Amino acid sequence: MGGTLTGQSLRHKVNQRFFMAVSNWESGTIQCPAKINLILRIGPRRRDSYHDIASLMLKLQWGDLLRINVRPSANVEIKLDCPGLSDLEPSRNLAYRAAELFLKNFKLSLRVDLSIEKWTPTEAGLGGGSSDAASVLRVLRDFLLQTRPHLYSKSAIRKRLLNMASQLGSDVAFLVQEEAAAWCQGRGDKMTPVRVLPSWPLVLIFPKSKISTAWAYRELDRFRGPKFRQDLQWEIMPTWLKNSKGICPIPAVENDFLNLALRAYEELQLCLEALTGSGALAGGMTGSGSCFFGIYRDQAEAEDSAVRLRASGWEAIATQTEAGAKK
Image (cartoon, rainbow, N blue to C red; front, top):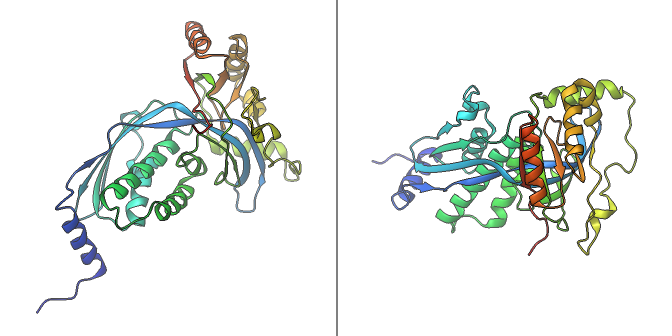
């Protein structure tokens, strides 16, 4: 007499039957776009110790490289190969945690092999780890839609994807979206797409100084004091971003962490001066630092400036933002 299948054993049986047809799936090489904050305003510390933000985030045409291989398995297995972060426990890596969360959320028993080629430095404010995690979620979503189109709708998966991204981090919530730019509020998970921005040529400079995000928030709170209050208009999107004709001037860069970082690290002041002297039309620090960026007239000028900055001893690269306008 046969026994009753439990939920777990039934799921395993369904998975095994399904993977008789699909036994191996590969993503190919995926670029995980880094981000910059053209505007970053930080609200007062909340009772839960978090801070609300108001930020204009833009994706870059540059970042880490990711490959994913998915195979059937009786149990959940996640393997991570990331030579650039070999000293970090895999379970503390955001990409690993994203895969783990996705499999748990969709109740999948699979082996997922992650391979990450790191290009974004840590503690730079570029969202490198967050973008890796966002890309893992997006690739596993594509796997699900390609291999099980009859089980899930795009809209249903999208809602669950955004929820998982928000659990992993505020930058992940932006980077998992299709949009190239957004005005982000709350913890970064309340987003208004910005589709009027062109692709701006950039130079990124990577100082030797590293800035911990936790340190930056702690020092900002200490500097401001317990009675600090933001201006009533601080969360409102700038009017130039609402330009329906798509005519966008080079913006003034804002970052509430900047002055704090410049006081703490002399190298960062030199970095800002180097960018200004290289012909950047505008520039500043992204996130809580320590990476700086400059915006240039065209890509040729950005490339030339990156060469001259490297000759002066700075680690610098030329890239560009993704265009926010829909074609």
